[in-house]
Image: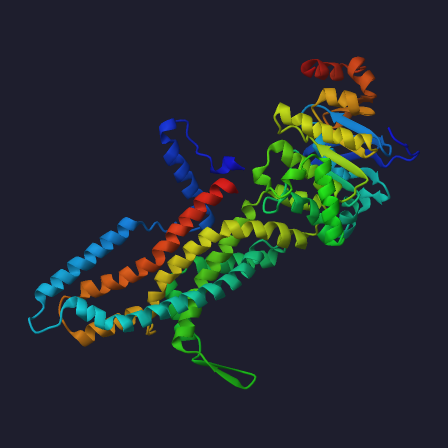
Length: 250
Length: 291
């Protein structure tokens, strides 16, 4: 953990969310300090991805509160406010979702140029630096269709970073990748964390979670079953459900 | 994403064909109308009919009459002038229809219910009405001139006919646009939103550019269909190729010219539409792999 502020940068209180009759989140609370790295693990359908989507207002919540930096996310009503929030919180998706009609570099440049309205030349320089940072300097003129999954995912990370967010959300970013390319993506995230970026990851990479996270949350059935430092949660889980889950996958 | 175009059969022998058929089915779903499948063989067959027609007519011709080919050659400049008129009608109808169709297509996807409903009604009415009926409707219900702010603009028959043909084009373009926009994964919207793009920016910078590529093949297909439909204008008296052919035939007043002349007209349309159809198929195949 880098310089950790006393006030958490992300703070969730008793967040509830239903899709129709299915209650996906049943009162989730957590705090993430600035520069902190948080991993959320748990079985599929336990609401992990929804949780991340709630944090940058892609999904509106039913009750509870979410505070990110200076935004009360649950109180944002206009599109304009939501867009302002998303400049601070960026999300990287499992399926990369790059824009297929633009080159890798253009993908990285688009949002700063058109959303932040920064001068194109400056953005270009920064984008080239970001591409170098994720190890894809040679691929900047390639189209997403010409890149491997791992490369696309790293471009997606660079694209998010170009917005200079305060918080990065990673939604199972390695789930669609083959084992070899997982490593290159995880290395990129590792570097980010080392630089003090606040990261929240939904992941199935337990080894990675253990190595990188300050706090690991285990979710199941829409609630946080157990949380704690990785050494504790992985080695001495207190709750049976956690133990059962870990014994399945470790 | 490639899964969409991937063949759905477990039998390896069927794979080459399955891939082709799946692609075609996907294309037709996008187009909303069957893809024109003009092939070179069709051209040869057409030419054969033309040759036989000429042969029969030649056999019936008197000794003092000029040969069939010479007769056709004599009329060709006039017929081609008519053909160029057909093409002009097709260009204008396509341009007008596309412009209106894009607007109507946005209407189809509008989040506002009344707009959506209205656009849906218009699209379905004009897509499903017979083209000839729309043509008659425009011919006889539009005035021969309109006066706007004291300026009188004449509406000649061909303008009205073009408008009549633009209506079904409009509805089909709207449907093509809707199909293309819905074929863009919603993840693209989500991804753009997460990067703080507004809805409007997302539409113009991210969704529509991807649509253009997907719309091009069905749009070209529609154009080829429209070109062939321009001869309908002959029924309402526009001086295009069919009308002129009929006039040429009555001027010649010789038996047996019918088959050769009309297959000659068909040949011209084939020569024009065949490259478009081939190109459409090529683009379809390329985008099916690439998208």
